[in-house]
Amino acid sequence: MRPDILPRLVNGPLGDPAVYAPFKYERRAVLFDLGDLTPLSPRSLLKVSHVFVSHTHVDHFIGFDQLLRLHLGRESRLVLFGPPGFVSNVEGKLKGYSWNLVRNYPYDFRLEVREVGPGPLEAARFACREAFARVALDPPDPLQDEGVILEEPGLRVRAVLLEHDIPCLAYALEEKQHLNVDKVRLEAMGLRVGPWIRNLKEILRNGCDDRDIEISVPAASGTGQETRKVPISVLRTEVIRITRGQKIAYVTDAAFTDTNVERIVALSRGADVFFCEAAFSERDRARARERRHLTAWQAGVIARMAGVSRLVLFHFSPKYYGEPGQLYEEARQAFGKAVE
Image (cartoon, rainbow, N blue to C red):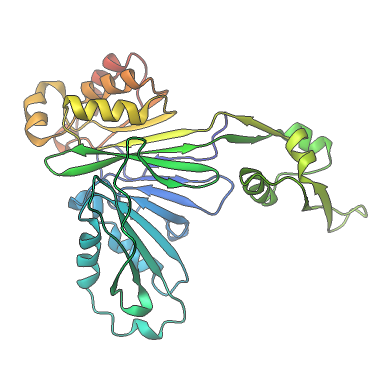
């Protein structure tokens, strides 16, 4: 499977937690956590549609200000998810600034903030032209056993609540199915990959294939382009190959307790990519227990129990700056295969 979602650590294993996941054929991306975002370009950040925040310790939330500033003056909507109390956290950030000039902005940036947990929960909208005054939305449903917090035609996002001395969320993003383009068959039909592929996949995910799609192709004269109408049903049969969807799991800041391990394994089971914190070495297990973090060996154990394909470690304590190889080796031994 050639993945359509390409997640990567923003700051490497020793920097602030943040995973940026762009969608290959869409002008869209999601973020897991909001640590330092300066390595990402404005163009990359403006693709972000949803942000999934684990908790609001400063190293997981400091990037909110950068994202906010970039969106000001633009007609855009950003949806944020976080643990209980998250709406008040965001409101506190917004109240730290003066907004006397934004009522005259030509475009209205809107934030939608939703809490995830057992309830009672809150949700709110903050609009730029309204000086980011808090407007209550219908409260979200309490987190259920299946953990679904976002459902779209092509994907879903699940969450579980973990214990880190405070509530902390872990997330899994799942493609419902993977739509792969057979480029050989496409070229045999005289067609080329282009932006229209994104539209085709969206149409198919919505279950519609009873109409034509317009595709730009080289003109018969040899110069310029012309539009060709192709039945979507033909493209679905001839060039689209449907396989199992991609799954990405993100876990950080979690104590190694029976309940946490059970929830993480259930959430991340069979993940193609498992981003898991590994704050400490096994030799510092007592410190990890005290600070409610995982060791690298514990991350490897959980990854093996969940049967994930790739384990990507991050959120190393600064004390391992000169010896990160030790953490990778401990995780490799517990996981039973190579660790990224």
